[in-house]
Length: 317
Image 1 (cartoon, rainbow, N blue to C red):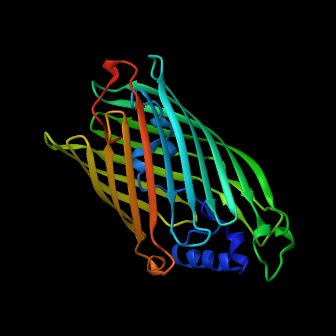
Image 2: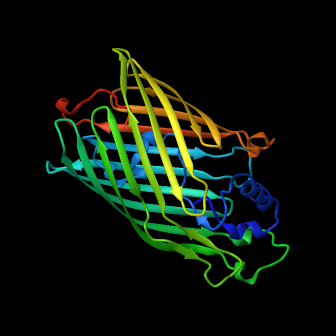
Image 3: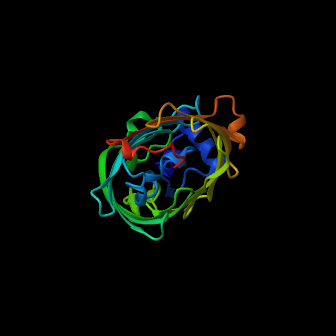
């Protein structure tokens, strides 16, 4: 949850900085967006429920992102997810929790993902996914100083519950994947009693794809793309390139359209355990601000192999 127009009307030290972000990036306004991830290629289930169970075994991952380090009230996001195929009939299930904070606001989403996979060829699989979610919104207006008090912003919002649902389609082979999804269909509005302060959760449309080339027996190359379209917000386009060396070390770079350049590094500690790190540097006016030290992200992923036949070489996705 990185968009709340209501906060911009409060000229405290925090809100002045938030206003600067709004002017520079268009993050705030009428449309409320999902959290963004630089290492989306390892966190696909957060945007597409069809991914649940696609790794062929139980997988668990945790991610932390600190955005615009040094800026008071800047976004912080934590995610945790677990997913696995169930039985032998193409069913996959997943559970995830996403906690997103910015300034005096926080939102926690609890998601349950269901997927059904059919084989389209010897290697190709097509998955249809459904997502059911419950979001808790918390806003602490009491932490802000209002020079022009608004009576509609006097009472904190504590754990306002909003149910939602989404869907996605995900196709993959051993070397290629592509998916289309809308994680949340319902457009929930808050503060409807006020004509001056509005926050809306609108639909986010995602397209994700990537391909793995074996350049030689020791080097794999994978370009990938994530596109997000939201009404009332700028188009988000993430382009990434990663190289995997000896199925152990991963090195890459990324570009977020008109927003940031990123460096990525990862290491497969074993066939089970991946650690990934990313650092973003803004290319907007916000990036040159003295109080902004960039954005940092870390992800840990562990795969459970219950039988020797279940073990696989480390994968990019």
